[in-house]
Image 1 (tube, one colour):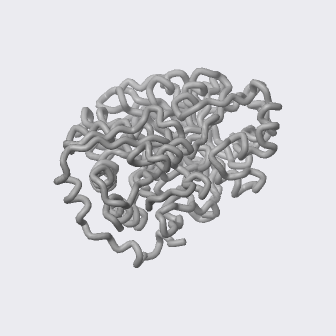
Image 2 (image 1 turned 90 degrees about the horizontal axis):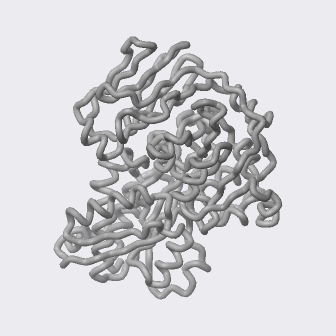
Image 3 (image 1 turned 60 degrees about the vertical axis):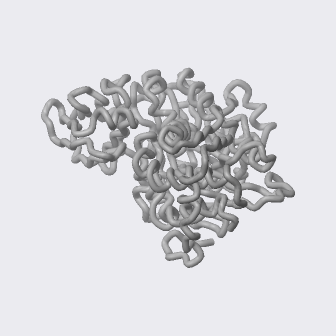
Length: 454
């Protein structure tokens, strides 16, 4: 494995010919399918690339999940595959063509829930508690394990159900009893509209912090806090209103919503649980991964509900009071779901801090990771001194063919455009984290290998 913390000689870039060839190629149409974790990102990126490049890029909506992305790609049904999980020898089969992983963006897998009884309070959950909920051991919302997690960290509630500034949302991370970090996210359209406008934080009714919207889609503001109400405004419009809270957890049954399809989101969600308890099996299938397998899930009855794709999982959570599941954070901060009461938990990391699923927390987590010769990333879940890491993360990949062809050359150009231009500008606005450092170097190298004959 190659550590991101070292300079990797083998990542010397291939001749920068593929990008120039891609831009000179006649108009092509390229298609991908697979992972739904990056669906929000791909939906925006394919439209923008098609608008500006002279080529047409599409990504199936819904993508079908990582397992389908791998199956379609190796069956030559798509020009690139979408996966958040590793390709097994069974999945690649007796593939005649050479291929490579191209990591292109990262993101947080939110532990997402709707629990109306706690009136906008953010859940604090440790990984053992998350594991207990998803293996069926913890069945009620007032379980002592959840109560203990809630008591272990300051609890803040957002009483604003619908953001007054379209496309703006906020996540609150208490960093101590008297401090917090506020993360304001602006969608690409909101970022464009708000550029040059003011973000204002009011403590009770007094303005205590301001920032000007520039080019970043996610703005972090550190606050010294007290027992007060903190109102977040963008261009004078209320986005969120946070206050300390002491919610009573209800004696209410938990409904677990999981991915029923072959899912890289499931695969990455299971990894921290497996690091805590090896009875969890890392793969794309939740009913195979959970201790006790499909038999155990069947025994839970209506308390466990499977849904195909990130959107369907997210909709089921948003529509069901008492539900909890896992999905990419952009599906949670979506205005329609958020207005229904869907939210994301702060999760306790290996350093003992409860952290929100922000782009910065994802970047912090993946910075201490390893990458193999083909471009696949392995996370370190034992970062006991990294207080800012969010533990449920994923790097999403395009699977690309290295053989020279007109379509693969355009796939290469599309991926290079994402890595060099689009992700740095738009990933945070869309709820993702752009790749940086040595991981970005490897990703660019692999993107240039697609369609290069190398």
